[in-house]
Amino acid sequence: MSASRSSFRPLAPAEELRRYALLQLMEVADSRTVRLALLNRFHHDVAREWNKNGFPVVAFGGSAGALPVLREILGLLPDDTGMAFVVIQHLSPDHKSLLAEILGKRTKMRVVQIKDNMEIEVNQVFVIPPNTDLTIADHTLHLAPRTLDERRRHRSIDSFFNSMAGERTIAGISIVLSGMDSDGIIGTAAVKASGGVTVAQEPETAIHGDLPRHVIADGFVDFIRGPEGIAEILVELSKRLRTGADS
Image (cartoon, helix red, strand yellow):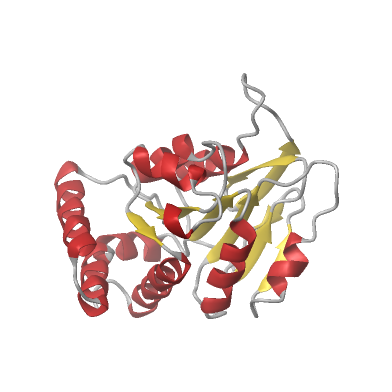
């Protein structure tokens, strides 16, 4: 499926303030019905922009303990969300990855391990291979040899989130799951600044809460949810995309 190539604008200050107010209301909402109603309002303008851009890209970033969460979320999603999914997982550089095969058993969506210059497509799950960094440009996935930062840390989540935020024809959703260290902080801020939606797993529901906890503390996360809540957000946003922002 080819996406249209119109621009995806950042939020104007007035829009940002309005959405922030809706987020605050949703955090204290005392029922699921109220939260979903607020979520509909929050995503109204975003859905309009995403319809112009073809389809959104949902990027999951995680490391230790993220696999069970990914399996649960994918198992709760329908196979026709109208979104593309990318999994950026910290993997051992020295072993073959079975991540695509494992995730493929929990969803009817096609799950593939990424090859260089692979075009991203709707209703599919794309999994990073070991020992690589991943970026996206013009709806095409690009692999490069794994690199380390000045502290000898692998920043594969930041690398992809940053590239997704900089791609003006993509409406991005970043989701940070269980893991250690702080990979994803910079990329989450970039996605937020680009007008995308940012999500983090509730640290209390994670096997290793360091990664989402660091991202949350930085202040650029829109939604903090457990696995079921993350799936609910994606399903509701999918419905908004299907019906159109003005329905």
